[in-house]
Every structure is written in structure tokens, then in C-alpha cells.
Length: 478
Image (cartoon, rainbow, N blue to C red; front, top):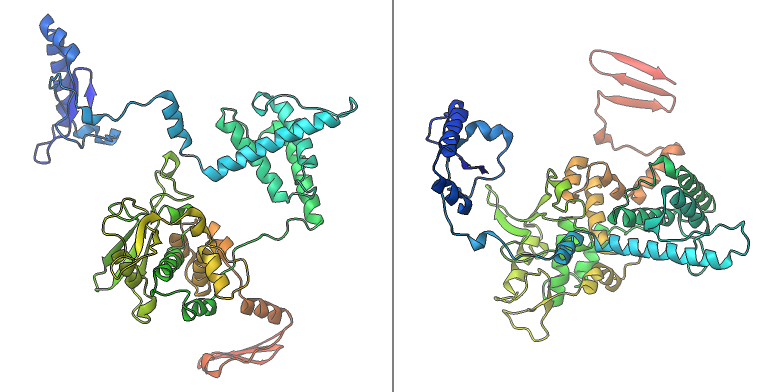
């Protein structure tokens, strides 16, 4: 790191720490430089500052005591490899916008377009001065105008068939408009700023009204895949490794289930090669496992806000009990049957129409829409009814861990959620629902004798509880 006519270098590990003399040494060098002749000063204008190591970066204030100051190395050679291609203003904007979620941007555009359509419609039906009209673009409106206009918008907006939107959809409409404003430099907080209390009251009242009418109470969630249904998929040959299509579907299923991947980008972003998120390892005890290391996800996009975010790392160990269903074995087979030289690094490749024993797949990625419907189509072929999607694999992983009594923290590390957010994936089983009903109705279930210790707790009747051991005995009546 350079400061004026000086550069700062790391001392080698073998050098003696001389940090107390840094300022004195620096001042001496500075004085010599200021008293140097005019030729030296002239030559300094063409000086290129170099460090002797590529590791002189990210120097924190805590490290300053371990630095030494030396005189600059003069050079007129510019290292062209140090800098990338020069970019234009438009290219820089494209880089900034590339960080945005395509789905969020699409929702924002839809919300803004819907608002403008509502503006135009309201102007056409405004036959009296009693009906307000709202002119101008959203970006040009004051907070007072936004508060007023959005209140009317929330009450009047309907679907194209005239039916009501769900309360959650109205909330998302307002959030999407806020996103559009912020993206264009208008910083507002619809749910916090005092200027929007009127709009918030309207939104709250409208959502409560819709709830009273039973609109939007049921959330459509992906169904979990039971162990029994999974066995059906294997027995019917929908999952397996005998054909290119079958193996591709099975690898997708096992990766989505074992690593609790999100249905969208996390599958599409899987890579093969040097920078793959998937890697094979062997434990100290000799067990093989496939490891997934997260790079980018919905909750960890690698930007400024996620510098301290712990990356998700999940292992899937080999299945020695049922080797034909082993994720490690099937992963190795899939990799072995990929093209030896592949132009793309996409993990999921299209099955080859003309395949051989060594070559099952083409160097062409599986299409986005094909990937999106894999689990749905597998379950349909298996005769399963319900809302089964790729997200079912993630929900199934979380639910199976919950039902097995795994700690929430471990489940969150597997799914990549915070410990609170993971609870939305906890699905109640039919047996649990019946247990709740039986407890409320005071139905008694026979306890297995082997589960009751002889000197433990006995329950003579529904109104008396006896507890005894070799030292004491007492009864509780209630």
C-alpha cells in the first residue's frame, strides 16, 4: 500500500518487529525526499508503485503495527494484466442491475403497470369533481400524493376477471411499488414512515375484510413426499439408473432431497468442473460422502450484506444398506457417463438420443422449464395426487428431520434457513393430528409395559397419580 512517496510492506516472519521506529523512519525518508534535487522530483511523476508480494491487501488498522515503510521502486512499465476491460456507463449499469432478482424485477414491473392502468381507468370514469384523479408518474409523486393514491388503489384493484386479490397479493403489490421507487432513487418506507399511515390503515382494513370473507386463507404449499410414496417411485422404475432419463431424474431427486435445495436457481446454478458446488470426499473412518458447498442462494448472494453470512455446507454419506439408492454411487455413475469434453459447465445435461455405454448425455444443458417440472412429472407418473413440485424435496427434507427429533439448528444448517424461518417447513403428520384430537377428548391409549419402569410412575385412575421408589411413596389426587 502506497502513501505519497512511500510504500508499505509486510515484514517477513523472520524479521524482528521494529514497529516503534516506523514513524521515525518514515519522517526521515520524507525529509530526504523533500530535500532531493529537482531531477528526482521530475522523475517521480512517472513512478509506478509496486509491492513485492500479491498478498498486501485487506490491511486492517489492527495490522498497522506490523508494517514497515521502504522507499518506492520506480518503474515506467504498466502491468496490463492488472486491469480488466474498460467499461462504458451503460455496461456499468448492466453490472449493477445484474445483481437484482429477475422474479422481483418482474413483479415490480407488473405492479407499476397495474397502477398506471388503474390511474388511466380512474380518469376515464371520473364524471364529477368528487372523484379524485391522480396524475403523473409514481416517481414524480410526493409522499402525500402516494399515500392518497395508494389507498384508493388498494380498495379498487381487482383481478382481470373481476374477482378479489388475496390480502397477501395486495401486500406484495405495495411492496413491489416500493421496490420500484427505491430502485430509482426514491427512498420510502411504506410500512414505517408516518407519511403513509393512511395507506397502511386502508391496507390493514382491506386485508381483514378479505380474511373475514374467507379469501386467501389457504396458502398453497408444496406437499411432502412420504417414505411410502418414495418407495413407489423406486419400485415403478421412475427412480433408478438403468436409462439416461431415469438416472438424470434420480440424481435431481437425490440432490434436491439430501441438500434441501430451493426449487429455482439453486438447481439451475449447479456446475460441474473446477468450480462445482458438489465434491466427493472420504472421511477419516473411510466413509465416502458427497458434499454440497453453497456459493449463491436466495438468502446469501455474496454481496455487501452477506459478508458475514455462513455458507451452507451439507454432506450426504454413501448408503451401504441400499446401494442401488446410494447418492454417492449414482453421482459417480452420472459423472462417468457425461461427455469427456463438455463445452458448458452446467451440471444437468440433456440425455443423448443415440447413446453408448460410455456416453449417455449431450453437451447441452437441460432446459429451465424441464427442470422446473421434473418432480411434478415424476409424481404424476407414480400415480401420486397432490401439489408436488421441486420445492417438495426441500419441504420433505425439513419435515423428515423434524419428525426424527433433529435439533432445529441442525435442520437450519441443512436447509440454509435461520432457526426461526425453518419452522414454516414443519409439516404436521396425520398421526400427530389424531394424537391432538385424542388428548383433547381424553382418549386413553394403552402403554407398552416395557416402557414403564417398575419403580417409576403409575396411574391407578384418571383422578389419582402414584409415584414411588425404594425411599418414598406418595399419591397425588386431582
